[in-house]
Length: 80
Image (cartoon, rainbow, N blue to C red; front, side, top):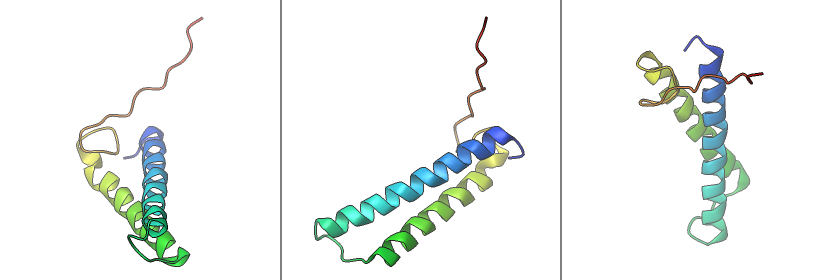
């Protein structure tokens, strides 16, 4: 949890989760499945992002990645 690679991977996961939740709610609204306004959609996306962040922090003791079973790939440097 104290590495830059962990926080980069966690930031990517939080942003990705936010976008997925937002798109799911907007898509559901567009299809008539749910009826939400933009404020509710952003709120749901924010809640999903917070859950992703907390999951990454809680699971950080067991692996080097933000997930339960994943590891952050080492950065590659080009060989000359």
